[in-house]
Amino acid sequence: MAGVNATQQLPQEKLAEDLDAMEEAITNLQVLYEKYFLGLDRKPPDQERRHVSEKMRLLKTTQVKNTALKFRIQALFAKLISFERMWDRTLREIEDGTYKRDLFKAKLHQARRSDDEPRPKSGAPQISDQMIRKLYDTYLVARQRTGESTAGLTVESLAARLRTQVPELMARHKARNIEFKVVIKGGKAVLKAIPHT
Picture 1 (cartoon, rainbow, N blue to C red):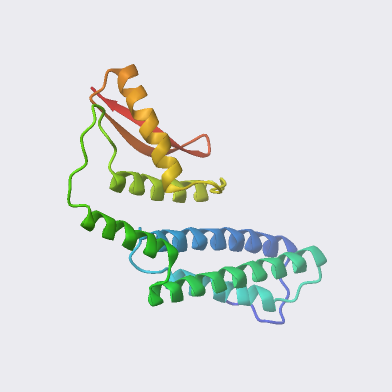
Picture 2 (spheres, rainbow, N blue to C red):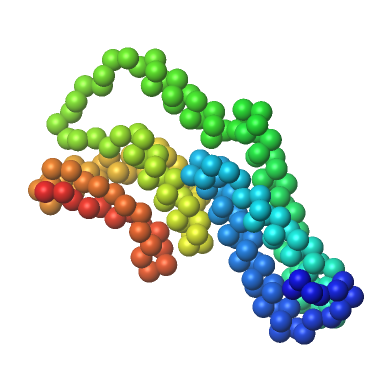
């Protein structure tokens, strides 16, 4: 794509392949930003974003006679612009300290600091909030990568589900502990329970 002039026309097949690659690059960039916003990556993917933006702007200036390809270029360009605005807004919120996920973490840390008394131990082992949060973050990114919906998926819903399953799994497998891992099976992200006897 680097040596293409703004007025030069590309063959339709090559352009269709470039658009497929661009769509995949935008999706990958979206996952990278989600990982950064979740705190899994330390730096935002600025270099990848610059690369995708440059390629998209080059595709936008390419002269295309095929109406379907023209429409697809415009739709991808609009999608990228929309994501860029959302990412910029979220980055500003992080800088200002008003980002919702950061506020949630701050309140959680504050609650932990103020809660000096240890919780009473019950008979069944409990999964720590930190472990659930880590599982949730990994599970969310895995579902996004596989193209599955993340609507309705919250830390609280995952915690409730895991905390009800642990005693059942321990009794069934006669295990002293249950470990959970996120795996992709059949193109879907799943939580795999590993009993330790």
